[in-house]
Image 1 (tube, rainbow, N blue to C red):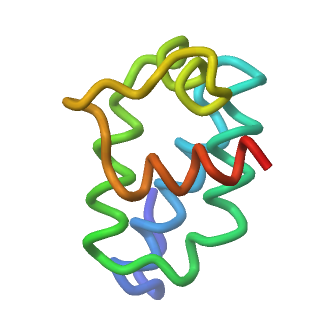
Image 2 (spheres, rainbow, N blue to C red):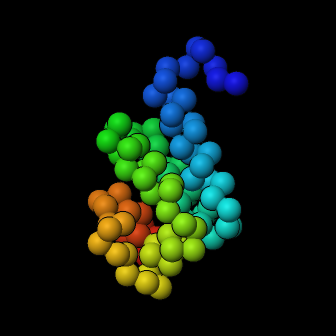
Length: 90
């Protein structure tokens, strides 16, 4: 059930944050969820659109790309994914 008192943008942020922190594997929950939790409040609609696309990627691939085990393929590459990877590799 949704909270009618919250604006739609806030509901979207809450849903995205939940998805980012409940990916399925603990490693990806930490990599994606940690990055998103720290920044979701300032995301624009375009950044949330990009995040929704990232949320559709398989956990195994996402974990490998964010940790540098494999290069991000051109079809999955995006500014948000590059920023997430840079943060994970620090």
